[in-house]
Length: 442
Ligand code: ACO
Ligand code: ZN
Image (cartoon, rainbow, N blue to C red):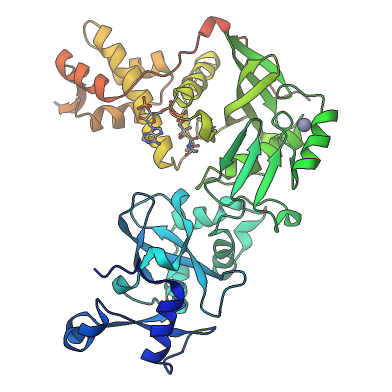
């Protein structure tokens, strides 16, 4: 692999122009680039090493990119843009790392790309056709993630256009309370925010503003010190508020805009009336500061007990995610129902749920004497039978004998799995939950 780190962009471009000025084909000024390990050796090495790379790189190009770990990883160029004040070929590239989640997509400079590794320049138009023809339900859903009501009527081309529009993060950072947070994904803020890369949120009412001064003015007159709605749980400094989307529409919508910045595969519902939001806060003398939340449909035919879950990045990996999950099952127990999270689960969502299910189920199996069925486990935990089955199957604790599933719970194996399932998270103290299930009021 040829390292290009030592060369400046200008030097690269200079080499390129002389190499072949004729080959321009793509939109915009294109300069072909001959990547060589060593100028003097170029002639002899040519058959083996020489590759022509057009600059600027096309969207769709696959290349190696130096990541924050200092190593090169395969990426696909998703978008490109001219550098302000740069020359005709000074572009930066928005790349997706094949091995990583989309939240790590980012703008990179040409210097980070190993041009010698350029594989192909994908013809996006051909790819477009293939993709739109072969769009699976999952892909369609992904495109719908920022859905506008009535999206079902959109044809494949409009959906593709929509995906095109959402592929690059729009808001790079937000300020919320005492934190400045880097965002992960696109969120469809109203058009008047199109020119913003940073937004300032009031941490209590979740109104968002373009400028810090606006937020400062807002904070002087905003009289909320906690989420609107009812405080249904308090234990130590932790409080949970239940917010009805119908009674607090603007709050619900603001929360959805905020959450979408960290949720990839979720639909953004403008119709927040149908949801309850459970907002977890850490409280001090300045107020109740949002840590995370989950949403729940008021009525779910699919027995979903949670639609979206989020722990804000500064609070992640501290056990709040498992607390929110445990809380959603405590609500299901009070309703006398079993529940399951809405699909699809994100990578982190799946890890958190798998960890939670494993810990809860194995704790029971460890303590339990005698036989226990999946139905009994489901009744005790409010975890849907299918989720119990897949969890125990993935731990290889289920055997199929004489036409039925049997749980095989060797204590040593259980201990090993429990250890691997990580920490238990923060416990929900059920006697501190004061809540009655939602009832439609006319
Ligand atoms: N890397 C590796 N493992 C992780 C990571 C990570 N970055 N984050 C969470 N996990 C795993 C770990 O096993 C962890 O347990 P451990 O810390 O004991 O090892 C477990 O998940 C849960 O950890 P918590 O601290 O309880 O969870 P957290 O507060 O970080 O919240 C959540 C988890 C809500 C999924 C968070 O990562 C998040 O908000 N992500 C962005 C939004 C999202 O993806 N939500 C789920 C979408 S699916 C749905 O909504 C139905
Ligand atoms: Zn406010």
